[in-house]
Each structure stands twice: as structure tokens, then as C-alpha cells.
Image (cartoon, rainbow, N blue to C red):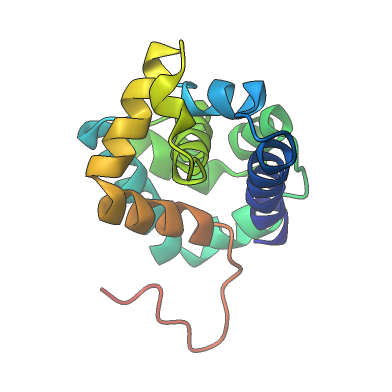
Length: 162
């Protein structure tokens, strides 16, 4: 959990402080927002994978053990050190790359309080900003579920219960 949350928090800090300091949307935020097209199908896959991992104590333990914080290293760790998690992703029809890119795109769009992504030259980022705006509640729910994937199991944990 700590590493996955650290990665997410690092992205949030980078996406909020840098644009706020420059009063202009950053290239990194545009790149993250346009990492891949957000769709309801992608959200469904992300949600299915997150729920499966949260329901599997061994998979959650794997994710909690990921210490890497850089995007590519996290993806490599999921693929090589987290076989149960990787199996849940595969079963949900999503790759670790797609999961990370989808999460990054949602975060970048959510953090765009000024609405600058809608004016971007990056057509995918622009479309994603509109998608997140139109599907904010669902994006918040799925994003929270994905972030919770990295939380280590605790005694009397209710995550496994439907």
C-alpha cells in the first residue's frame, strides 16, 4: 500500500504544485491525462481488477510488498513479483500498463481544476477531461478502488466481504 500510495501521492503533488506555481498546465499533466483514452469499458475493467485484488488477501499482500515508486518499475514489479495480482488483471481483461495509465489519466483530469485540459492540443487529454467531468462519481469510485489495491490485509478486514 505504502509504495502504491506513494506513487499516487507523488503524481498528485506533481500535478498540483507544478501547475499552481506556473499558473499553466504542465506538460507532464497533459501527458498523463492523455496516456490512454478513458472509456466506461476501461473503468469496468479497472474496477473488476481492483475488486478481485481487494478480495484476495494474497494478492493484496503482493501489492503491499511492491516498493518501487516509478511507473515502469511498478508495472514491472506487478508483472514479475505479483503473480496473483497479474492473474486478476488478466482475468479482468486489463494490463498493468493500462491500469497505471488509466489511473494517471483520471488523476490528471481530476486535478485540472482550472479546466486547461479542455483547451489542450492533446485530443486524448481533452476527451479524457470531458469524460471524467461527465463520469466524476464513477471515476472517483474506481480510482479509490485501484488505490486500495495496495493496502495490506488487516485483521478483521472487511474488503473481502461483498
